[in-house]
Length: 334
Image 1 (cartoon, rainbow, N blue to C red):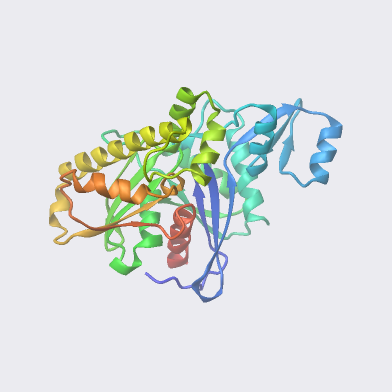
Image 2 (tube, rainbow, N blue to C red):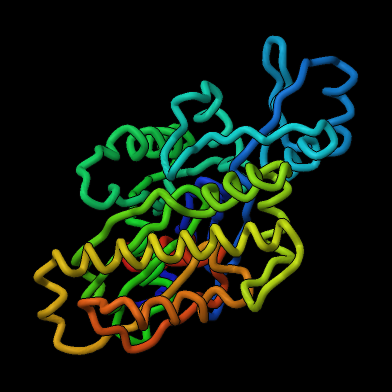
């Protein structure tokens, strides 16, 4: 697979529960990334507030009675108003409890991609079905495709775990395990020579850690998430109540993920036919804290996994990996 940039207008799009990330090709096989948090807040509309938001260039939409501020700026408003942000997506899928979901996703994507589509190719990420279930992803995938098509793009989906493999495992000819630990889901894919052999998802991920730690510390999940991504590390013990709670729920998530890997690979006959150990790469915002790889690798070594792993890697930039892989896929098809 080549990173050929014959289709310079191609775009990779990671439609994540926590963030939406867009990847664009640059010269010399380099990439440009833009991201916005996939969340919003709303408050009563007023002409004065609307004019000030316009003046400050804060992304927002105005409804009949409410103003909706979306993306990164919504977190500041949530902190000031002492409320939680609202989420267009839940557990990797469009949130049916939020009537504004598709409108907010459309606005965030438009702010990231800029000008109308003009027929440009967009490859967008979709989650895998949960392990042991055949849940339909039809509504989520079709809804995102419709949003992009209405904006003038030629849209094509890619499994999130496979996108991670495309982004990070070129050295092994795209053979190995890609894991994206995001907000709503941990997505797992095993591929052989860029062909997906097995993929599944687990619902215990970043949001689970945030909500669980918030419930035992009295903090808001917003605050927990920001601390987790910027100041938290998994190295050693801590007397701090929030750090301790995060460590407990991180360990729980890691054990659940490894248990899911063990069950899925034990049930898949194909894993015994690969013939050699394969690399495993970790990506997504949940793997950002220092010490995550070491914690995961130690637990993995004790698991008796049916698939031999040659090394455990962390993506070069865990927050950009899925969008980068989606772009590589778009470029290869261009």
